[in-house]
Image 1 (tube, rainbow, N blue to C red):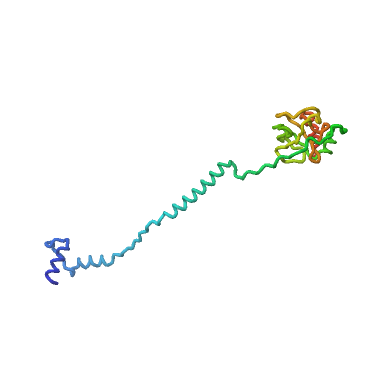
Image 2: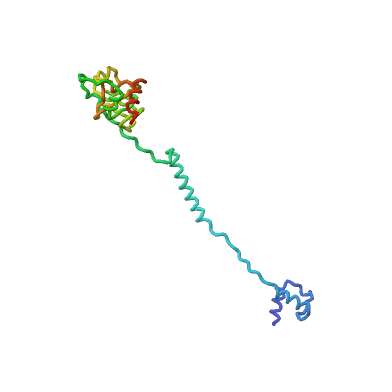
Length: 202
């Protein structure tokens, strides 16, 4: 070993040059060396955290979808889509002959001659057209409104009682035309009981 190398090693050695050293051939040095050689070594694996960016973005997308669906349901107020209402039923209310003979009213005869029967409230009267909101269907319909094509003067055919907004009427019809002669008219408890009896068996 050259003097230059010894000088470099001396500069790297943290031990002061004046500290006495023990030869490696002594018993104590051999015991230290044996202890060092017999000490097992341990390998430690450092686990690094996996990138979370993809999971964060996926979670955010799912949350946004849930919020969008919930917002849509909140706007509609219902889990089911709205069902379209049936269109108004249109009946002819002016085809009856004023001079025709009338059959006496009875629940049995009403049940025989009426294809359509309902109780409704007049919501609009516009010239030749009367609109009623259906309160109760007795036979033959599902619409929530019924429109009567009512030419001027028709009120004389149903006992001289005109249709007035807010009034309730019991109406029966056959072949698309309103039945008169007591088979249609202003609602009353007794008249309603007759309709209920006529259609009690469906």
